[in-house]
Image 1 (spheres, rainbow, N blue to C red):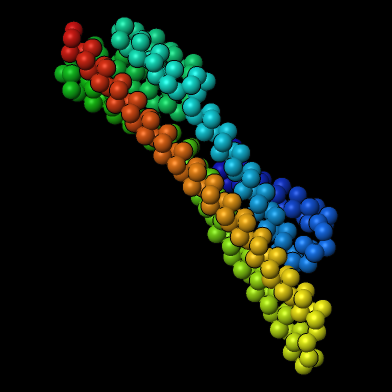
Image 2 (image 1 turned 180 degrees about the vertical axis):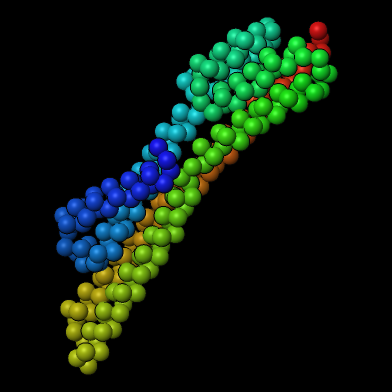
Length: 240
């Protein structure tokens, strides 16, 4: 599914759910005004993107735990079973397996070509780097949307605060005396929107940072795995 279509569907569904939820909220929360529904929509989108990222990152690791997968790859490479290692990558799937398989497939092509060892290893490294460039955007997808939701939630909360304060001062200016009911409603609207905006923003920012850290660690692990594979292949070639 295209990224733009996915985000549009998430936004539309989240808005529909937010409107329904808003209608059944307690009165003291609904006093925050229609912007509360928008904050609910943003929170639903944030939760949806969280589950989507967790699913994607889990799938990127592949079927087998990464340490066990790398041990099996190393065993096959040490025994000279390059085809078996490539086949294991095909069964494992995931981002790491795709990157390693690209390098192993390239090695199977160039190992019998009349090239020196350095050139062959450079070809293998280049193939894995190209595959990595295709995998990384998939891992980082929707992170910008999560960060954007955090920023928008803060602005929506601030807008609700300003509107609530405007209503409070308007209540004071119309009669020249303090209308406790209207003043309380305005302040209540301001505080509810402030609290809602901060909650959604904090939730989204924390998740964004968690996912960025997870992706950075995963990219580092992929880099280490590619270096290990190249080194093993180089040593096998040098001992021929």
